[in-house]
Image (cartoon, rainbow, N blue to C red; front, top):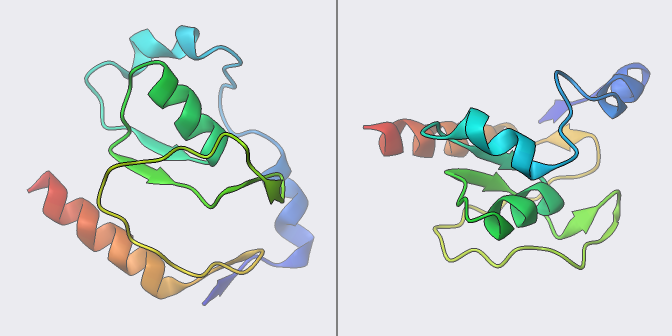
Length: 104
C-alpha cells in the first residue's frame, strides 16, 4: 500500500497547475482529449456540461463529508478500499491495466 507521509499532506491541499472555477472555461481546452476526473464534484460538473469522463475516481465524499452531488455513472466500476492518505497498490495496477486495455 502506498502511504502519503504526514509531512507532505499539506502539499496536496494546494492546486497543481491552472485552477478553473467555471467548467465553461475549460471546455474548449479538453475537446477531443481523454478525460480523467478526480472527485465527485468535478465528475458531477463535467457530466452536467455533457462531458462523460473516460475515467472517474469518486468516493461519495467531498472534503471528507458525504457529497450530495455524487454522480450516478452507468459505466464499468472498479471498487477499492482507500484509507485516508493511502492508496492500495492493487487499485492503481487495476486502473492502469484497464486504461491500457481501453486505449487498445
